Image 1 (cartoon, rainbow, N blue to C red):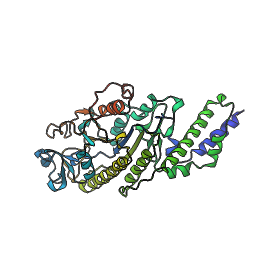
Image 2 (cartoon, rainbow, N blue to C red):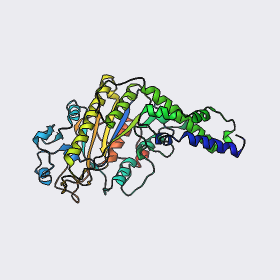
Image 3 (cartoon, rainbow, N blue to C red):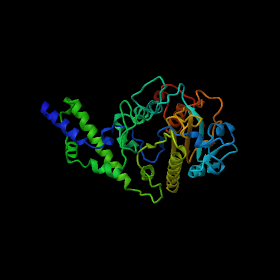
Image 4 (cartoon, helix red, strand yellow):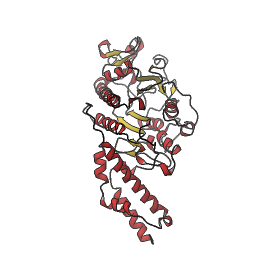
Length: 401
């Protein structure tokens, strides 16, 4: 380019190219894991604040039924897994994973000075910060920043199966890519202006660093959309997933993993678990969708020898209060459970004591496990990455991986 008008023209064309869904706008440059056959992390976010006490039920604890006279789950609504704990009976798929030694359960997970706002608490979990700190980057995004040089960056190495990118997936230098459907992604990328601009080489772009950045970002994004689309055609699952958006998107992840995609981290959400009124029906429906989809997903991976390479983290931004409210629901709480599923857990089962339902803080469960200990374990023991720079300090690891 020889003048300002040429630079403005490129900027305009690049802007036109990005007049696509948010998943293209949000993409950036990230790591490349190499063979595409390495370890994979799948993060499942239960949005809205899941009621963990009606998910994993302390059915022998009288305080549970005293606090929940209407919504407490009765014997015929449970799948018992220990002498003291039972799953909601809509979690049959999860119970199978538990029985097979493929599920680890961590109780009373949270953070100091819990925040009861959905948005703020989610920022804390995704940003991996203290409650008093604010961050414009997320823990997975910082993982990308700390494990990649610009030369090895590929936007498809971390994918959020959605139309927009969560804070968790945004780094300072590098960002993941969001894609709800590879076919839609591919159609959106067939923009003739974008393809034309990406194909052009400009010898003196070093004189215009902003133009060079736009061009490089466009090229990388289009390359990743082509890659994701081509990988999505290699394997098509015959497994029956729940007829729901969450099931469809989890099926997409399975297909990409089994195809040998280079993607190392996947992120997916299911909601809404904000059950302030008439909780039983809505939560039970969502838990069944979640459990049935996870079961189908894990079976897909087992049949194709990828289950031992995959670890699945399930979390929610907070739990619910111990006592039910007047609307036969539950209000925003604090600590809750984390589920870890996978074919190669170092330790499975219930890893720490069930929550204390009588030693509460403002009606909420007290946390005993900082959620960043879960992240530290995944980063170091599964993704083989030092965690201190990503999480801000050292956290004691847990024993599930």
